[in-house]
Length: 277
Length: 277
Image (cartoon, rainbow over all chains, first blue to last red):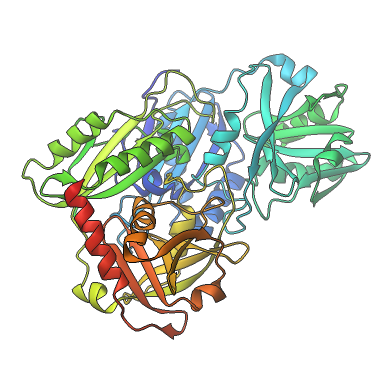
């Protein structure tokens, strides 16, 4: 991958950021990563709603959907497929944490290539590792996909093995929270549970969609505090994000699970919904 | 204050940042803010040591002191006084949290004006407010002046009153940690205590210096877990940072303290040390 990649900053292709931007100074902003298929951002309504909710929780002004859609169109004049990453920061400001009414959000939209995942991830499942880093409890930031992501960076530093796809992070009480770049769902018989993210973690759009879709697969979906021991007893571990949809994790923490059907069924339903969206 | 201010990015005066910089994407970096007097960065050895330690904890490569000093000289050709803000980010990288060996730190040095604080802050003391936001415990990040500062931003949003200089933040157990932009020291008789920052907070250089200087004022200095109730019983509350040195807080949480001598003595000693440094 080479840089600079095609990027618009506030709609302009000059693609550079002020060093006084509070997104850099304080991680004062939020982001989204979503697939673009043949020029169309996927599940856009949900991504925009989540972006807007995240902005609102930080008292950030969120640009209108039309501006962001227009940016994505500008970046995909070839109607190709790829990824759109959107960053909304609070914009440039003086030294110091105080916010002034003059500050104008910076809107960044980047086009990147779709990650080239091996086909066997979908067929045979992926391997996860258990991270040592424990997520801090901060209810004021929990769930938000904000730019303060040093915990994820530190957790991701814990493994080099390219066969490991993601790392599972627990919170400081030992509850399972998420992968560094995915959400986790666990099937126990007919129940599909995902960790409660009111104290830490990022509540992804695909996690929400799967919770909504579960009943159509005869599964009762819910949110719970889940210990590592409980996770190890799950019949299936599913990880999800907006780019790959849902995969089964078949190796984790010394245990192996047989490949089963749920991840594929979920990918099918997620895809079908895209087409309706 | 107008932007762009004089800034060097990797020593170059073009002063703009790649939108792919991980400082923006993840807050993946550290910073320092220090006074520059007649062109000379103050207490440089300690600031550089702290910068270098903070980089090391994030596995970030820290630029040599000579490069940073050279940047500051370039920004102060007039040998004036002001502030230097240094940001070291992990540099531009692909989407995703993983770090590659190709990444090269981005080094940003900015010149800004010295804040224009009223003289009465030094003479009569300042007013603090108590923030509702509670700091999360993250021992892996505690003490580091990193770029993940949304907690400070949210805490700073809690007051608008210009008579309030800073807000006191507690941790999630109710212990006093710091101000949003200052460290706190509390005098109880002949003891000078400062909150333990092993679980959260930023360990500033001036706090360290004051702990070192305290014995010369006949004070026994130490680090402790301090509750809000204990703080309210202090004989004097001192706040400190690298720009203003030390001030007494004379109003906080419904109580008023008489102006005393410690803050002025500390400013004198801190200043004297500058001249030796």
